[in-house]
Length: 195
Image (cartoon, rainbow, N blue to C red):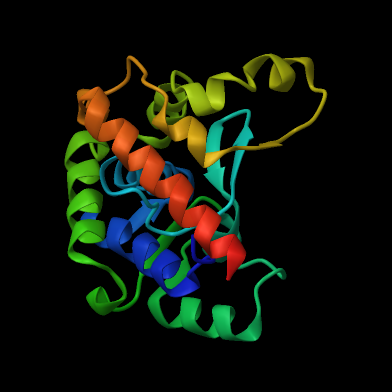
């Protein structure tokens, strides 16, 4: 698996702000990013962003993308400069798109999956999406630890995104296709570690 792609991340945030009419709640966008990575991984054997995910009390969060949307001090000068060209914070909770989407950073499947996720979940607000995320197995496995406050976050494993759930039917796939996707994902990760 290739490393995190900050340009894709910024453009993913930009995509969802544009889809929402120009600005969007940060937490809502982060949930839509996670759902997009989840679906793309299950269908095409790779996530869109290759971000590191953490389970927090309010659901899964793409760590580096969160830094980008919040414009934190953890960003490199290049990341900050690119981010500021395309998105800006409106207030503590929302950000806005500044320019049209730079589609060339995405594959056709990346864009299609993000469109499908927005169609399936875009009508929900950030709190509804947080509640929805609590039903997915990759977050659910940390629920007890989060409630006990043994830590405020736990690193998630992409392999858990392949576990079946009773969530939205958009994630339903036949067992053979899902297993093939998972095998290809694991094989690609193994090859990448050898390079």
